[in-house]
Every structure is written in structure tokens, then in C-alpha cells.
Length: 540
Ligand SMILES: Nc1ncnc2c1ncn2[C@@H]1O[C@H](COP(=O)(O)OP(=O)(O)OP(=O)(O)O)[C@@H](O)[C@H]1O
Image (cartoon, rainbow, N blue to C red; front, side, top):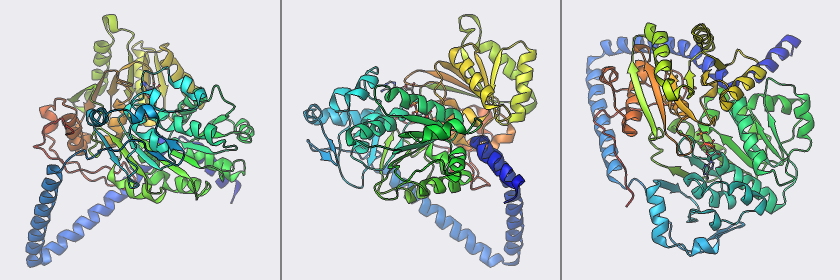
């Protein structure tokens, strides 16, 4: 390999993966569009030449539609949440149900499951009861004292912990801001302490540098009273310090590019990793990451490894790939996660506007949301591309706004500074690309403004999830233009699913979400039922 090529490769691996994937997707989608057009033309010619076969096709497609409808009707008539957990003292591989959980009445367990719309798909039939209060779980006291700052576990923690402490592979799907980091973090650290593990045994993979750092901070807090050493591995900073710390680390949180880089340098050995987490798992399983993830997982223990996938969105398209890395996973979902859905405590406002009106509209929204007693409210503005972010940053500065910015054209130091300024409130505006869409837990973000709609509806759910976290409420204000009309159907479904008004102008775009032209991208496809009204599903 030539020096230039090597250098290019290194740079590539250190670039922010998230933005990189977004841009790759767009480039590829152009060539795929061309391919699609050619296919369409071919099909058209074929149709013309055979009118009888075309009649057959119509019949066939009607039949298909009928079958699909029947299947759908059947599905919707069946029980939505099928979880029942019966039985009392349960134990499995090192996890023993506490006596206080055993004495909990079955009706209390049932109402917890129903109120939180819990679904558990457990191929092992373990029937493990959810941990409803902290006194129902026996954790190492060094961890117990850290998490006791919270009043009780969040639903995803309640349900996932017993399975994770039992050594099972788990897919955890729960809304944004619902405590998924501790859902996988607490058992990770508890297992190290109680099983007396040494060496590098826990690896969590994150899609962005900022999220890797945040998860690292959470794990440092959890291990603060222990000798466990944690390290964050991410690009844009020197490797030397990371290499040194890797020699003694027990827990690694990493972005894929830098981790692979260090693996290639021989600076990290994952062969003893037996607790592997893909955070924002659907993102990590997209085509742009797939190879990297395969290579990383290939370096970990293949036998006796516990593999976890956590996310707020779990599109069908990634599920098969997920299974290839897992061993009979238990799937735990909170809320109706089979349908893509947003956190219901977020007020969603969607305005359909002319794209040339965006900048004027943004300035008026900032005036509206930061006026009077709300003048210091934190607002997060999402642009789609680095260029757009740069342009809007100048626009805001010209209008005397003090704005922090995070996107791929900035150095890691600038990004970290910007995020800190927004976290501490030194700057009440943060302008970001989708680098900040997932996972970031920034206190008190009151409003998220989508200046340009993201490339997928999943990304929309993650973006708006930067507000309304940990039980709080928030506002998401989205500017939608004709350019994004192919995503209108998916957006309409999300709005309806969260009991939010759907503007007539959005309905006019129709209710069909087109299949993504590029399979690497978002993997979100859905036929939209325009007759669907928002419903509250009850567990009975
Ligand atoms: N048991 C708990 N009770 C109350 N708050 C909690 C609890 N556990 C975690 N939190 C807090 O909830 C917030 C959101 O948690 P976290 O960032 O893990 O959410 P998430 O589900 O991973 O969100 P996202 O899908 O956006 O990544 C954090 O500030 C965290 O400290």
C-alpha cells in the first residue's frame, strides 16, 4: 500500500463516521437512481410488448395486495402486547431473583408491564420479572450507591437488567432519553465486579465521537468507587494517550474508525471481550458501517460473548444482520416499537414552507422561542450538511446570535468546546448536523428546530429526541419543503402515532413513503395507512 493511500485510509477512518455515512449515502443514491430509471424504462418496454402478461401482472398485484391486507388485518386483530410473566422465584446463570421481587404480587407485575407497554420476546422462556424498584435487585454496593441517585429504574432498565445479569444477549428498544445507557452499563460493570473479570472485557461501540465520550462519562461515574478502568477511543485526537491507556483498560467505549485503526496498529486486543454493546444499533448495522462492525466483532470472543444492541428505532431491514452477531437474543421493547414512533412528551410542529423561505423563518422562530422569560432557553438547530451549517452559522452571527456549532468541518477541539458551551448554557444555541442527532444527552434542551429535514424518518425521531428527555417535555419545530415530500408518509405516521396534528399541506404530499433508493441508507420503508388514527394501546 502506497504512503498516500495509507494516509488517506487513516484520515478516512478518523473522520466522523456519522457524517461520512450520510454523505456516502447521497452520492450512491444518485447512481442508484440512474439504475432505477434504466430498470423502469426496460420494464416499460417489456410491458408494451406483452399486453396479456401485463393483465396477468395486474391480477397478480391485486392478489398480492389482497393477501397483504388480510395478513395485516389478522395481525392487527391479535393481541398487541403478549408479555405475561408468571412464576415466582426465578434464577438463571448467576442471577437470582431477590426475595422482595418474589413477594411482589402478580397483579403489580402485570400492571407494570401493561402501563409501560412492555413486550418481551424470550426464546429461553426465562420469565424473568421486571425490577420495579432498586431494592428488588442485588447489585454490587459500589454501583448501587451511584444509581440510587435516581428514584427508580426506567422501564427499559427494569426489564433488561434481569436478562443481562443472566448473561443473555439482549436487543433493547425504548424511546429516546429513556436511560438506555445505564440499561446496558449497570450490568456491564456489575458483571465485572461480581464475576471477578480482569483485562479488557467490555466494549461499547458508538456512532459518533461525542456519544462515545458521553457514554464513557457515564461509565466512569458508575465505576467511580471501583478499580475498573474505562477509556474512550475516538478519532480527531492523538492516538498515543489512547494506546497507553488501552494497556490496562477494562472497559472501552469506541467509535469504529479509530478502534479499527488501533487494532491494525496492534495496539488493542479484543480477544477477551465478552460483553459487547452496539449502541444506536440500527445505525451501526447500516451498510456504511457493516464491514467495520464485522471486523471489530471478529476480534472479540466468539464463544461465551454476550452481545447487546440498544436503540430507539429498530427498522426491519437491520434485524436479520443483527441476528448474525447474536445468540438467541431476548428482545425487550418499551412502547409500540415495531412501529417507528417518537417520544410522546415532545410537541411536534411541522410547517410546510417554500425552501427559499427557510432562513427568514428560522430567525422568526428564534425570536418566538427565545423571548421574555424564555430568552435563555436552549435551542438545538439541525441542518443537513456541513455547508448548510456553515452558512447558517454566519447568518446567525450576522444577526447577533451567539451560536455554537458541531459539524464535520470543525476540529475535534472546536466540536468539544461547542458542545460544552451549549451544555453549560454559555451558548443557548447549538447548530448541528446529524452528528448530534443520536444519543446526546444535553440537559434542558427546550426546542429542536429542523431547518432541513433529515434523510430518514428514523433520524427525525432521534433528532427530536434531544429534547423531552428523562420524563421532561419539549418542542420540535420542523420546516418541511417539497424537496422532502417522499418522506411525508413516514412523518405523518409518526405525528399520528404521537397524537400530534398533521398539517393539511403535509397531507397534500400524499401518504406514501418511497422505498429508499439506496439500501445503505436508513433502511426505512413503510407503506402508510392514511386511515390510521392515533391510538392508545392497552394491555389487558
Ligand atoms: N433510572 C433513572 N431515572 C431517572 N433518570 C435516569 C435514570 N437512568 C438514567 N437516567 C437519565 O436519563 C437521561 C437519558 O438517559 P440516556 O442518555 O441513557 O438515554 P437513551 O435512552 O440512551 O437516549 P437516546 O435514545 O437518545 O440515546 C440521562 O440524563 C440519564 O442520566
